[in-house]
Image 1: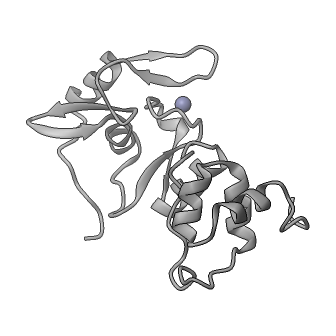
Image 2 (image 1 turned 180 degrees about the vertical axis):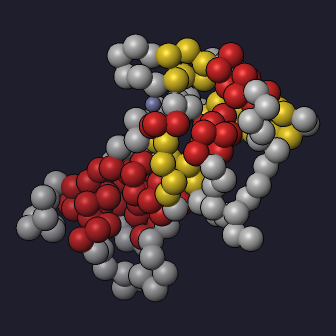
Length: 163
Ligand SMILES: [Zn+2]
């Protein structure tokens, strides 16, 4: 199969639910969920099933979401359920997207496997991510380096060649 199929139907029930529980932001064009949320995402229950509003919206408007894929926001507004603002991405895409937008501050992703040893050296990618934000102590713990190392990297005392 490769696709998840949920009970979202076009009989108006889910569509009605979505249309009823959102407000259009005239500035951004976002369809912002006005109901309950889970971790910032709109949520609701449909036939006893827990549903995330942006995923439901994607499925009713655009079709099934491939297995293990996420529905991401072009607009970086978790409450938004405007199908035009939604796109399919992998967890990796989403993390990178969030990092670039600074949404994951204080919660950096684990480093790539194999680089977690004591002799772990930072990579260009990691340095850019570290400079994007996050708690220095968290980065240090995740990467197995000293906090001083993180500070130097941010002050550009090290890795100065990177922007
Ligand atoms: Zn939006």
